[in-house]
Image (cartoon, rainbow, N blue to C red; front, side, top):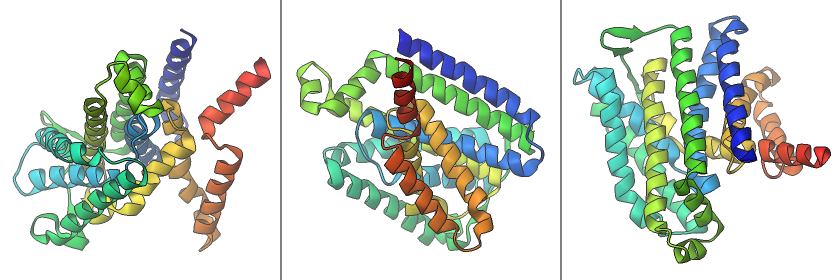
Length: 313
C-alpha cells in the first residue's frame, strides 16, 4: 500500500512538473531539450521494464527506435500515408519483428543475450544505411510534419504537450503494470526463472511480451521523434544510441520508473552542460558517469531513496 501511495505521489509530482515547466522555459532551445528528454524518458521506461524488472539485457533498442522513425518517414514521404496511420503501421510491424526475434534471442542469457541484441541492432543500422533507394543511405531523408485529421503539430510548445502527455501516460501505464500480477511475474523472472516457473509463471511468454512491448514503445517514440525533427539519418539506430539508452536505465535506477526519467534527464542534459569544455566534454562526461556509479551504485533514485529511508528510520 505504501509503495502504491509513493508511486501515486510520484505521478502527481511528475504531472505538476510537466504542467509548470512551460512557465519557466525561456525559448525554443529549452523546449527542444525538454522534448528530447521526454522522448528518451519514455523509451527508457519501456527498456527498464525489460532490463530492470525482468533482467533481460538489450543492447540493440536503438534499432527499434530507428526502424520506427524510418518506417514513418518512408510511408509518409514516399507513399503518401497519413502520419498517424504510418505510426500505427510502424508500431505493428515492429511488434511482429520483435515477436519473430524474441523467442530465439531470449533463450540466451547474460553476455550471450547482450551480444545477440547488439548484433540485431547492428544489422538494422546496416540495412538502413545500405538501402539508399528507400532510406536515403548515409545522407538520411526528410520527414513530413505530423498531422492528425488535418491538424498539424508544429512549434515547440505543441510538440512539448504531445511528448509530455506521452511521458505521463507511459509512467502511469508502467506503474500499473508493475503493481499488477503480470508485473510481479516479471520481477519473479528477474529473481529466478526456475522459481518463477515453479510457481506457475510462463517465463518464455512473459519475456517475449515485455520484449515486444519495449520494442513497440521505442518504435512509437522513433516515429514521433522523426516527425518532430524533420530529418533522420541511420545514426539514430546506431550502437552508441543503444548504449546511451541502457545507461539512462542504469544511471537513473534499475527497476525504477522514475529512475528512468532521472536517467533520461541527466544523460540528455549533460552533453549540453559540458559543451563549453571544448574537446574535453567526453572526458568530463565519463568522469561524471564513473562518479555516479561509484557513489550511487544502484542508480540515482534507488540510492537516494534508500538513504532517505535510513535517515528517517
